[in-house]
Length: 219
Image 1 (cartoon, helix red, strand yellow):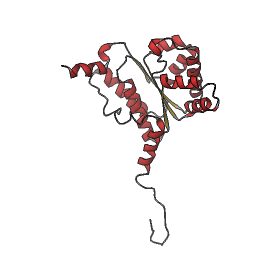
Image 2 (cartoon, helix red, strand yellow):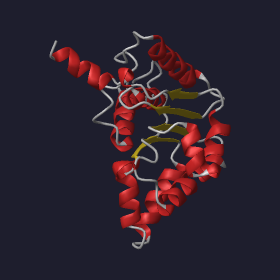
Image 3 (cartoon, helix red, strand yellow):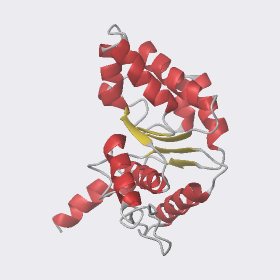
Image 4 (spheres, one colour):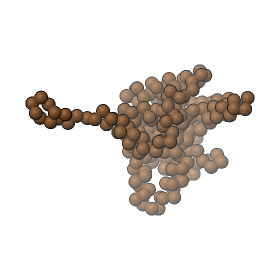
């Protein structure tokens, strides 16, 4: 931009924030979910759905809270609402990372002897400004998490617990009581950090929106 006095000044391109947001999405691992799993597309017809949405919207506006947990019933929109939260945080300029628990825990355990690859992955999970762990402690055929699973979860969550400025979003098919039964140290850290941003959904197939949508297709 040329000023009246003949000097040239640089001005931020209007598309800079859009490009930055796209770059954050690419790096987060949520590219394939971010378009579908938004607050606008989260169905909130039932009372319990409205509670989830209102709590999530309050969280993204609360600069004093950095942990969010939703656990319980399968298919009730846990991944959807957590992805919507992460999307909003990225719009605010936060760098985020998506961790699908079952996939990533298998990779970590496979690479534990590889040295650098394992430590680089763990460092990212422990230090990224926003981390979303999807389906914490989900295991093959509902088996109890292994000692290795628990140790890795503790290492990641304890590091983030000790750095209160980091934001941690957690979804799980387990409620807090079940997580406490797996490992009290992990469960108690989650409980302390999430504060009022804890949502637990009773196991109720009627809340499984995937089944409801499929049933409607055949009616």
